[in-house]
Image 1 (tube, helix red, strand yellow):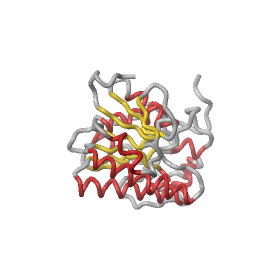
Image 2 (cartoon, helix red, strand yellow):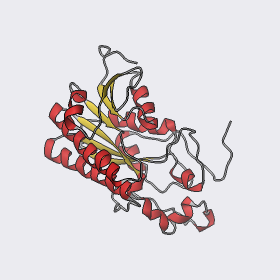
Image 3 (cartoon, helix red, strand yellow):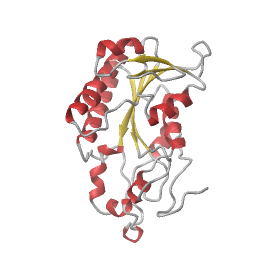
Length: 260
């Protein structure tokens, strides 16, 4: 891991014991100083052990930090977990960042904020790999399309995006929200729906790194992190234009065997 004195940015990654936070944090640490904010210790990096639902406990993690990558989240079904992890926790991260003078927060959001669109044709055909029923040109959702969460988790992520907009406008903080597609340890889709929203390890790492290095002129924005899949219905042109994100991977057909 990069030593604190070796240059680069000073970055705090929350939720670094998770799959995405771990991959992103370790990649960023090759050229930057990375600190983790986690409930349990993260080997190989400076780590502040605290729960993001406790504002006083997490404040020390933000001292001297330039950029926060917020990947900690509650993924379970309990509403109480959504409140503590994704509502209070998101507020605490933004507030601690503001207090510490952090210049940019990258908020790990989710495609669940618009997942209900998948219940309607022709997007339903795309996530079911019914190619004959998909019109040309295919439908593409953009960041300007209305939210349609399919559950409390997606609604909670919209709260985080709204907080980001507020903290950018009210406090001059650069905030980039990333609606992350389906990322799994195996780095390969399980089914047709997953193949449509699949985001490879390389692509999610690239997206966050592009956000970290984005120009200061990016004050608030929202991007989709998704690979270039045949069933993709989420826009990637906007992130290409603004920060240069071009997916390296994608699922060109489904079903298909995983390349060796």
